[in-house]
Image 1 (cartoon, chains in turn cyan, yellow):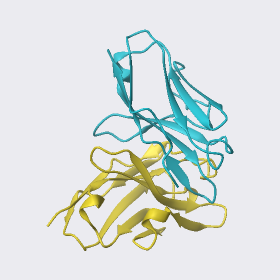
Image 2 (image 1 turned 30 degrees about the horizontal axis):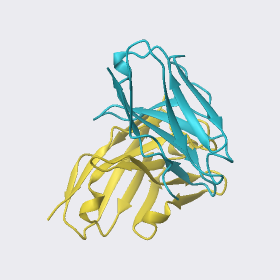
Image 3 (image 1 turned 45 degrees about the vertical axis):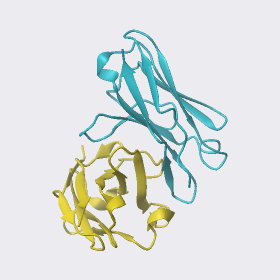
Length: 110
Length: 121
């Protein structure tokens, strides 16, 4: 499987909103509503932020939201805060019990 | 609440094998579908394989087939990931990861702390 495509970097000022895209194919993102998003700070374990495309785990701020259109999933972070600065990865079920991650996006809060 | 505690850092020579462990507490291993994910320096997360709850088998990413073996010791609630024929490109942090929904939704809300494997001559 090929990795899902994410922008290498995005940036925004505190209080602004940003969106990170995650483009797959009809074999993964386009077919299954099983996209998850992870926040990863260097040296720490990844943290689940969104699952099943749009659902937030308990404890995750409602500033984080997920959506999907066709073969592209998106993560939107509103009201950017300094603590949001991290790497973000999308992940999708790809059929046959397999999973594929995106290449990751580095979010910089200016 | 699930806790996943992994074994310590390893340094291996090219061609050797490494076996990383992931000890489960809070739940039994039989209640979970364990997966393994790695991150090489400067690279993204990469799924290596995991347990398929539909048929009770372990599925490996095509890239690692033939070199990776994922096993479980249910008597100690410990999962293992063994990678053989190591090369420098296998230098990475290896994570075990799971969820509490039986593994049918393929997301990971619990992660081990990571194990650094360094492959160097």
